[in-house]
Amino acid sequence: MIIRVLRITVREDRLEDFKRHMNEVALPRVKSQPGLVSINVGQPRPDAPCTYCFVMTWDSIGSLKDFA
Image (spheres, one colour):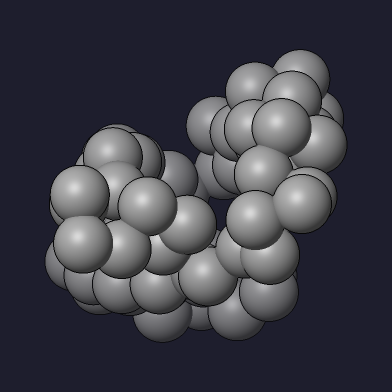
């Protein structure tokens, strides 16, 4: 298993666009990838309201490379 942690900071004026894109485009695409075991999206902390953390688990480095 390979765990990939991705932290993204979004400009405050683009936050709603980011949320919409993640829910409508990005997450469905990632979830459909062969080899993805799980994806967890952390909600921002109060002290960092524009920073999101994604934790993805892949079955192999090959699957992750094929996705990336």
